[in-house]
Length: 219
Image 1: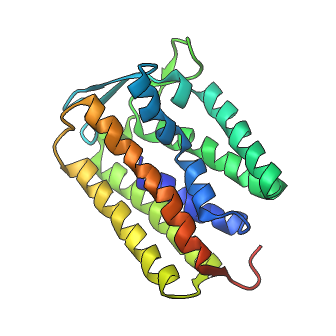
Image 2: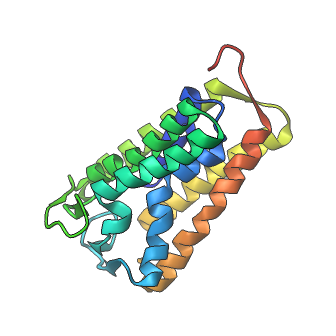
Image 3: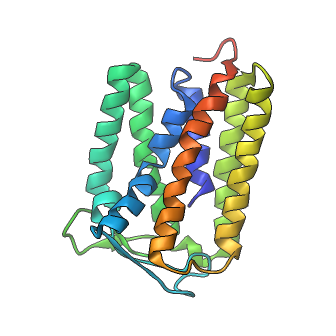
């Protein structure tokens, strides 16, 4: 899942409006943010196998430190604790839940390749990437639903808050279409660096969120 994770970040602003959207995007995308770093360091492995699922040509061979259930719990506590220390308990709790949500949404989409803990043999995943219709519908439901909740929570304070927000939404939609309809990446290294470039969405989200006001009666 890609857009769905951003949808969770948008929706989470409703639950803890004191959080910057940049923090929520960081939390919701944390597992995918650290994954390419671990790939480049050789700590985790992925193969490019066109046809392994109908939507994503990736064979996730080993990613226990970024995507196991146990490490997801650890990362949730770490990120949630840091946000709690800086912003408050509610903000930290919601940020931690955003981190955890990533793994559970991935369970819906992935083949049975998500580990429960480092070194464990068990792998789970419902494999909805083999159903294009289910993939598009779930991505749309989470993404559009999250955007609608965000728009009910905040309103643009100026042109940056309005147009940068919509540019962000359009950018993510283009990435999604390219991911699912374009050719497989030429190499794992190229894919890792391209994935790392998506860290730019964190300061981008924080920027336009600063130019939006929380609506009265929210929070």
